[in-house]
Image (cartoon, rainbow, N blue to C red; front, side, top):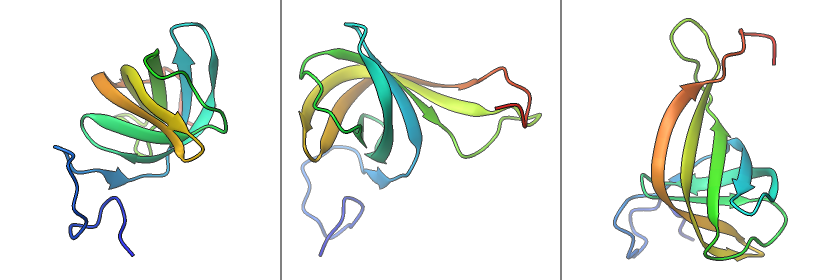
Length: 111
C-alpha cells in the first residue's frame, strides 16, 4: 500500500505532497462557502474533504487553521487562493496560485 507521501509511489506531480489534518474554511468566488478537512498539500496544490462536490474551474479561497502560533502567541492561519481542478467523492483538489500566513487578530485563548 502506498500513500501520497510515499517516495516509492510513482507520481507525476512536480511538488511533493504532505499528509495534513488541518481544519479549513473555503469560499468560492460565486459566494458558496463551507468547512472542511485538509487531507494533503504541497506548495502548489491542496486536497480537502468538505462533503460536497464543488464546481471545477471555480476560483476558491481557503483558510487553514495552522497548528503553530505566531510570535507572541497569536493564532496563525494559512490563506491560499486558487482554482478547483477536481471535485468528487474522494475530495476537492485545487491548484494554488497565492498563499500566505496571517495572524487571526484574536488574543490567545479567545477562539
